[in-house]
Figure 1 (cartoon, rainbow, N blue to C red):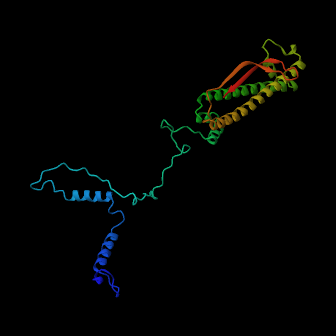
Figure 2: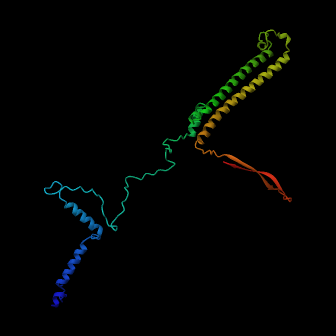
Figure 3: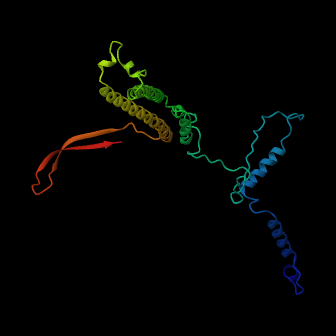
Length: 271
């Protein structure tokens, strides 16, 4: 009887030992978590759906169709994180690269270099490019005024220069300096020394004003370029509307040994 329950001297197992080993092998053949409550519930649910008779089968009543439940029950221990696809890179939106504002419009961002070149090509184009249209009449008016002053002073210079030359030559037929006087004035009644000094001073003054107007034109041309560059660079410069000065009388101690209080003014600039 002892051979049927225990291992004999030859190393063979009895029937009980064989039964235990077979049951252990069957248990180990199932995956981990197969008999967990979630897996059992999912298996029973799939079995119920598979054994449900069709709606058109004879002798069966039509039942309301069960909702298509696509929920997959997994054991918490077997759940794996889903990795993102490497083929589609994540989209990153930064405030500096976002081309639209909160109203859905593209903000105006002029280029300082382009504004300078446009202003150099034609004064006023840089201001139009920067959308500072109110500066355009100032630029046009400045060039028109300086251009007219340059032309007027140049004509005055040429007239006085020609009259001064006629006074210095010995030709009696050249009398252009008499055109500055009324027809009733005679040449014999005029002092030639006074005429020479007067014409010389007038021609020098007209030449100086003409040169100053030309310098003003060049300065205005450069100022238009500088204004276009600065205006384009400071387009998005934040200018706060809270610009105020608060002041109030106060008592302060005088410097020195006296230490007596003195009436003063305390002010603060907010910007």
